Image (cartoon, rainbow, N blue to C red; front, top):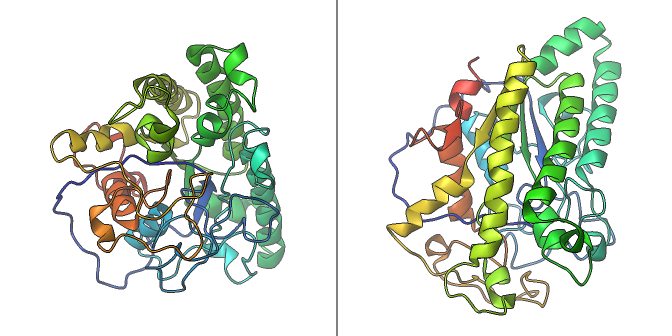
Length: 351
């Protein structure tokens, strides 16, 4: 599981209604439950969402998406002019993989051990293994030269949205994991970024050149974390948000370093925390839209809030489609220079 803390903001952004050729030839998605579109459905795990009320507003119903409708990765795909959602790796056919694959997995983390108490999940390392298998499959199907395939992959867009579980389902669970006993928040963020850096360099070696990295939202503002905080802080748990801020600052520096070291690639950072600060102006309650189970997910077939477009969180940790829409649009077209650095997605895909 993972989270966004996204807030109500009225932004005038153009609506894309023309059926155009996709702005990139393919689109690959890595991450956790914020982008999972069904990869966990067949796993033995608590981290799955292939039951109602998840998907209540999605055309195909409960597909495994941890929200009421589309994920932010789905919406970004629409903004890129793809006419279909990018398929989950678990179900992607030979005919589909040339347009991209979604490797996201609920409970996944940068660290392999993250989320182990949930059961099955596909860590970022394993997602990269799956991507390598996809590339081999793609090359075999195309029967083209290696050079042609490498040039094709360099034009594609890659997004990575991961790290929330390394806090929610690792560092912030001291009775299940030792990380918070061993490391200060600064030390832990340093370790995460070091491992993340190696994983991103591996992605680069597999041909990725346009890579979008999503920062973490203020995890301390999720209903799940607020409910278990001993101090019962009303709006947000400040100590948790402070730890997340350390990670985000280091991730931004990593993006700068990668852009300096890999001159033929373009990395960019999406500042989800900054986007979320708009709630300071128009506050919405940090309340879930469904009745929760102990683990913070929706109870099966529970009744949900009637106006889901007025809710930030669908369950204890995951955003509603409404919130996903705001994040997706502001990552695609930045409203503030602080939203994306050094490029928003609409500029990145043109480079």
